[in-house]
Image 1 (cartoon, rainbow, N blue to C red):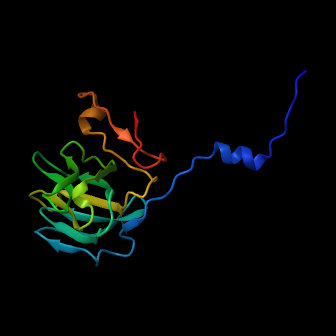
Image 2 (cartoon, rainbow, N blue to C red; image 1 turned 180 degrees about the vertical axis):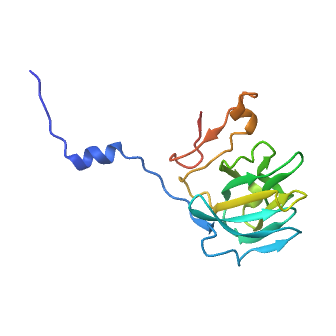
Image 3 (cartoon, rainbow, N blue to C red; image 1 turned 135 degrees about the vertical axis):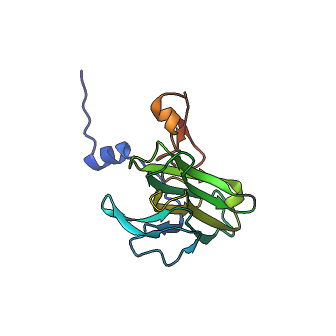
Length: 196
């Protein structure tokens, strides 16, 4: 005899949901309110411009912008952002990096060939970002004001769990010239990774 059981809809929906705790955000910068919190250096154009329906920070030639973030007492610090480039030639690049207790750590770099207007989400976590004051620096490494680098959605968060950790799939990987493996911990508990 077949026996049926009714399960309340709410219980069914909860069992199908994905749960994660959200990491505490130490910095969230989308440039919708400008860039007055940032320090600028170098030569070249800079400004807030609209790209894809959102304001982004545009840096050109050798312009750089930096901001300090206090991570005292915090471990598992992660930095994530979106990068986009236009007009890069040969040795030009767009760079996102951070410095904590050690040397500069690269978060992401775009080069000639990655400057066709695609957005590249990049992220990095490093123990040198923990329990200190870090400097997040974004910059253009070019020779002309038409070497444009765009930065947006910069998030510095702690390692309290969950959230979305993104790892860049390189240009070579996307073009099929290198067999890379990358990981993501999207919607998984902290310290858990799933290989794609």
